[in-house]
Image 1 (cartoon, rainbow, N blue to C red):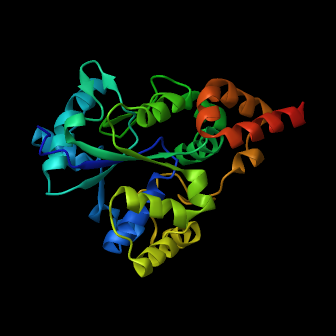
Image 2: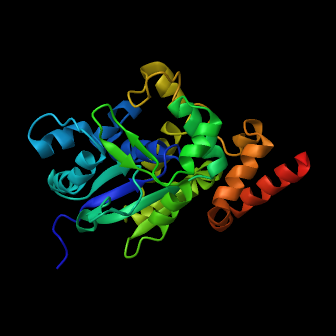
Length: 286
């Protein structure tokens, strides 16, 4: 029998792949929410309040295991927190740490999987994390890559290619895949496809307004006027460029070649046009 808690619709992505954009659209369409009120429609699996609830106090992890061991309990609490489906943002990969599922099947209804080519991710991840592009590529290439909050709430990322493959190849997962590049090229088509996956009838006026309110320029405007509470400390702006192919102006030939070498098969599978552009970029420099 299916679990009565199978309510979570994951919004899963490697960092800087378009997760916030998708959440902003859903927030606008369903709740008319601004970027600072996305919690009205979505939550996240690393939100401190869930971990505090799980331990019955203030969670302060001592090490990696403390956070990971609590993930199943946290996800059950999220699923049980209100009736019906629940959108949950995550940057975790799908997989296991020992016996522990990072993404718990018993509470999972479906997933919106957002992917972006790793050349642009490397640039955006570097800016977002206040690190060099080389360090960004190092982290994207590390099997043990993770992010941690000040209280040691952990997101297990792993390598960029393994992360993408984990979501797109997870057995038995009802999923809808969105490429950031396609969202930019034809947002109307891509977000209509998302609504179809969610089995939500599209109200045309509401849909059109949500597209307008969550265009990249509109998101930049909101951030400029209201700030954005999800912006990391030390970062001037969250919504910076929002374009595809910007890597050509930011990466060296050596960095492009390294990313291609690290992630070639996954780039070829999901971003064949970008693989071609990278090969041309390298050849032109040589």
